[in-house]
Structures are given as structure tokens and as C-alpha cells.
Image 1 (cartoon, rainbow, N blue to C red):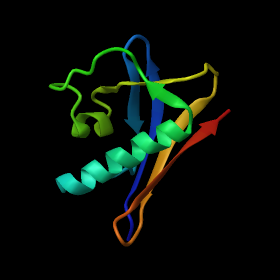
Image 2 (cartoon, rainbow, N blue to C red):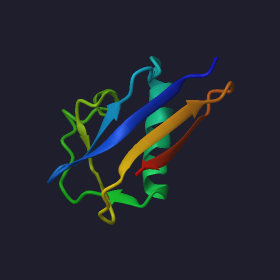
Image 3 (tube, rainbow, N blue to C red):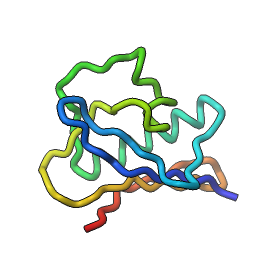
Image 4 (cartoon, one colour):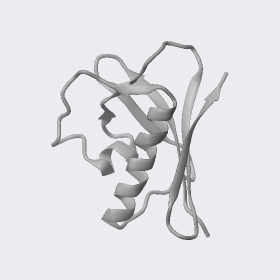
Length: 106
């Protein structure tokens, strides 16, 4: 069985974006797997035209665990404004590779 992680991407003015995991989302327990998911999320945001927010990152609050759990903001922002709702959707393959994409809901 593969793991899935889905979260709404919510803009937090002046800070970046917060991931709000949907029901049924899971995050890996092992640190290396958790890092792979976080990297896949970041790559998906980049492909979807998100860019780094200019505000400095608070490393004590913005841990990978907190970011994926929706307890901290990520230093990213949309490169263009739109009224659509964005979700990052990830699925882990049987070999442990995470594939993520950003989907838009109008």
C-alpha cells in the first residue's frame, strides 16, 4: 500500500504559505522519508510557479514536521495572484519515491 499526502496551500500574508493537510493524509515517520516528501512538495510548488518569500525563515519554528503538519508557514508565495484554491497532492510509490503536483480547484 502506498502513502498519500494532500494539503491545501493557504497564503499567509507577509509570511508565505501554510499547508493544511486534508483528512486521510499521512506523513512518513522515518526522517529520511519525511525529508523526501518535503523535497517533493517544494519541487511541486516550484513547478507550479511558487517562489521563495523574501522574509527570513525561522528555523526553530519551521521544521519539516511542522511544515507538513500545517503548524508553520513555508517561505513560499504565489508568483501571480489568482482566486483559485491550490492543493499539493503527493503519492508514494512502492519503491519509496514521492511524486507531488499542485492542483487547482476553481
